[in-house]
Each structure stands twice: as structure tokens, then as C-alpha cells.
Amino acid sequence: LFFFLSFAVNAFASPIWQPFNQGVRHTGAITEIAINPKNSDEIFAESRLAGLFKSIDHGKTWNPVAQTIFAGKRIRQIIFHPARTNEIFVAAQDGVYQSLDDGQTWQKISEYQRAYLTFNPVNADEIYLVDLFFTYDKKAIFKSNDDGKTWFEIKISNNNDLWLLGKVSISPSQPNIL
Image (tube, rainbow, N blue to C red; front, side):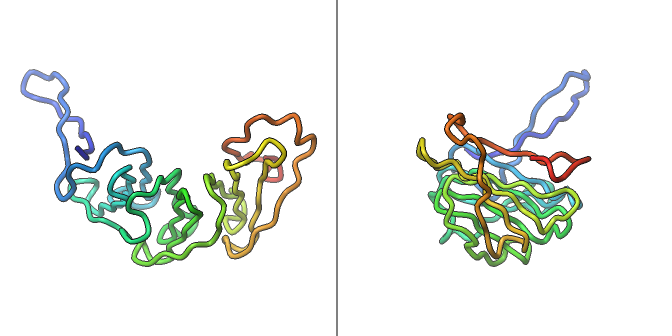
């Protein structure tokens, strides 16, 4: 059952949780949630069974998004562009998708599977992608300088010492350091 929890206080001042699940039922586990950093009413959530959903009323109601693309796919990350929050990225099991219009339309911008994205805090068009789908001889970080239109591989020194490459972060004070 798909629902979000909202904190409420009853007459005895003890906390209770109330479900908000109007519009969405029986969707399996929710594994990814993204809240628009400039508008907390806008939320995207991924359901393991039913795909991607969007709420524009702080989670009270939900509508499916691009079910022909996302239904039945494992979504690893949903992230808003830090400067242009109408631009959303979804890292799915078959690649990375981008929407430029608040999730109305989507285009696949990379074939990298099991990806994780992070943005440069100084230049938001600079995106780093960690490809979590690796073999023991190939672990990769990719970079885009043009908002995901093109990607190039960043060579990792001493690649043999890495057993598992996971999420990557960028230093806010020194954005040239990953």
C-alpha cells in the first residue's frame, strides 16, 4: 500500500501518524522520494511495482508520471536540477532520464545503468555520474559539462584498489574535489 505519513497531534498531545494515499494504491515499496527544493508541494516518488508518481499538493494526492517509461523499472535516484527545478533527472535501471518541463515529457540522456548523479554546487550544468554497474576491471565516473547532453569518462587512479564505487559528492567549498 502506497502512502506518505503526516505527523499530527491528538487531543491528548500524543503523536499519531496519518496516511496520505489518495489516488495511489497497491504499488509496493517506495524506495525513492524527491521534494522540489524551491516548492515543497511538488514531490516525486518511485514505487517498485507501479513506477513514478508526482504530487503537487504536498503528498495529499498522487498522479502517475510517464508510466510507459517508468512502470516496472527500478529507479535508483530522483533529483531536481539545483538551479532549474522544472528540470528533473531520474536514474533508472536502463539509463538516466531528464525532464525539462516538470515531468510532463522525458528523454533518455544516458545508457548508464545503476547510475547516481550529483551536481557541481558552483556550476549546476556540470553533472557527475557514477556508474554502479561495473565489473571488477571497470569502475567509472562520468562528467557532463552541458547539463547531461554529452558525457566523458573520468579516469580513476589506482582503479584496482576500488572494490565498490558508490555515490560521489562534491566539496561545496572546493568544487574541484570529488
